Figure 1 (cartoon, rainbow, N blue to C red):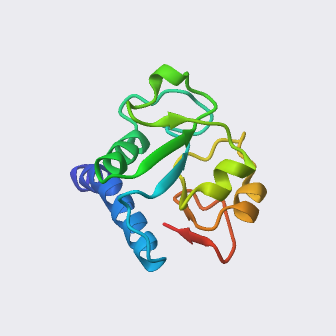
Figure 2: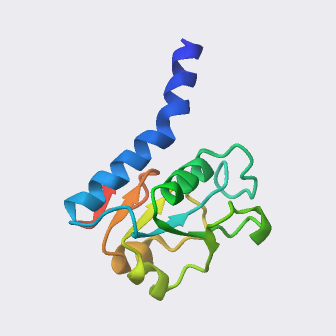
Length: 137
């Protein structure tokens, strides 16, 4: 049972990336060249540790597919984010310019109402957002 659970967890980043690709395709966008705003890279809510974080794996995979990956990570120092990922603040401009806003870690610091009101497409892996522009895991 534990082995099966570990295998599912190990493959979850791949599954999330495939779902993001599919969501972008539904909007006639390719992941290559898409602007992806990742909310949260930390291993869990309200902490700054991204070592072995599945969210960091997702960010690296999206980079590898040619996406422009930016992240809002309020609990981690800039030097900790994966190479190639730009660390930004959660602003209306960042939300509006993103082809997809990908919620991976549901920090309390995030303004979920602002995210839903501003972003054109939200992929929510934490079940925090509701709306016609939101796809949940």
